[in-house]
Amino acid sequence: MKKELLKIGFKPLTLLNKIIKKDEKLIFFYSNLGFRDNVKAFYDYLIQNKYHEKYRIVVSANDYERFMENAPEGVAFVGMKQGIRYFMKAKVAFFCFGKYPIKPARKQMVVNLWHGTPLKKIGNLEKGCEKIDYNFFTKVLTTAPMYKPIMASIFGCKTSQVEVMGNPRNDEMFVPDKLKDAAIRRGSRKVFLWLPTYREYNPDFLISCLSKDDLEQLNEYLKGVECRMLIKLHPLQQMEEKLKNYPYIDFITEEQLQKQKMTVYTLLRNADALITDYSSVYFDYMLMDRPIAFAVEDMEEYGTKRGFVFDNPKEYMPGMEIKNVEDVEKFISDTFNGVDSYGEQRREINDRVNYYKDGDTCERIAKRFIR
Image (tube, rainbow, N blue to C red):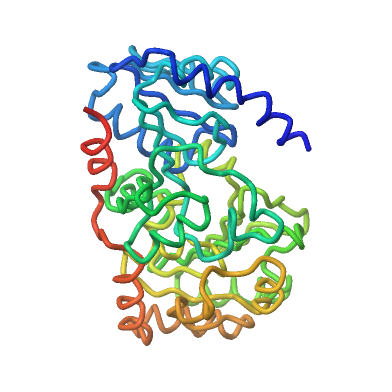
């Protein structure tokens, strides 16, 4: 009800946005779920390439105060309310979540970078959300032609509004950083990354297929092969007291990554293999062409309660299924010994879901939308 009232309150701003003159030299970013992910990755690219010396860049975010002190000259960080007036002045604006419910003006380019390649149902495809208006952009980006009609259905927009560009955040996987990479690998022969998905219907879910005893067993196994396991919790998951870091297993939170000025893509770059479930991040990781395993023991329940954009989601999961600690150990052993039984299938799926397989997404977006 609160969201609906908010949209009604924003309706006059849509009319006002149509008549306000746009500033050709103003680039605007906004997010009310933290300045991160695709929107932060693209902002970083613009700063690295000195766009702030030719344009004025304004970022509106709920956590804007974190970035104010180190903002480069030509860049301003403001709160969400302040951001509204900059949004209506900007010739071009970017977001990937936390939209303003203000329709773009005819001479304004509002780009929804989004934050992933959908596997689970979202937007208008979710039960009970079929009639919600999500189309507050000029363009929304995706990763492959096959996703154009899917994204149009999700956001209730025309397929002509969907453009194949890729995810800006993926560029980080192609750029080594000696200090950060060394801090992650810590001399390990192989690094394994586990990314569990948040379950709305079971918020306490972490990694149900592993008990405390299993973790201790896995730690000993990792010790024997001189490898490490990183378990990165979803931003909505809470670190449980019973979870602790073992010598060869680390539980990592979003807050910890931010303190180290890292992202999950820093971890992905260094991961020799990935374990996940319904997180679309594994579509991103396919660009690395490394082994992936799936812990999807609750797929039937997840499919019933959340649903998938594909009739047969397992067709898009090219990797072994993890059901217990022995499966984890086998996956580690196979990867360690260069056994990649799903490599051909993974590359075939990668061709379907990732049209571009490079680290140049930010460059494509800048050339397309910033004149």
